[in-house]
Image (cartoon, rainbow, N blue to C red):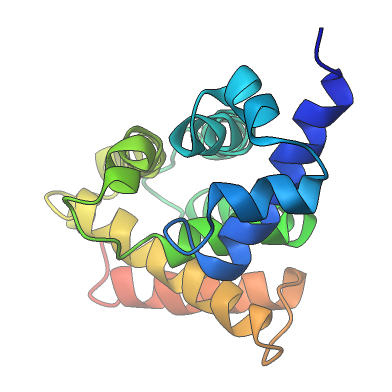
Length: 201
């Protein structure tokens, strides 16, 4: 029986290399060398490089989407957006920031894959998780639009724009330009909410 510690070590080493070099840039030989195990050990646990990548997504991205679903759940008041809309967007932003701070290698890995070619093998593996993420955020804006009709028809574009603003901040944080703290989260939400409600309800 293979040592279960070897499985965890392989996952950690693969995540580190995928984060540093990208999925295509990290080879199986590098992963097993860093983990101090043999190729047959990797094949035993994961069958392939795609298999170990899929396990990383299942653990981290699945957990992340569960957190997003919880933080984006809210009933919205047509007479207020500061107390419900802004607070919900703030919870979502803080959830992104917290997960990126706590799991920087994973988050940088998924950011690096955001613009992978649609035909790339890795795209097919990560696509269901990306879709699930945007469905969660879009659903939040759909609920928001029921109380704030000015958002009707813009739910999907709002979801993409909002996540893009959050990820831009995380990208700048990764390069040491900004902090992803509560103050930065409030700034992101303020800028975004000002844009979507600029014309008023």
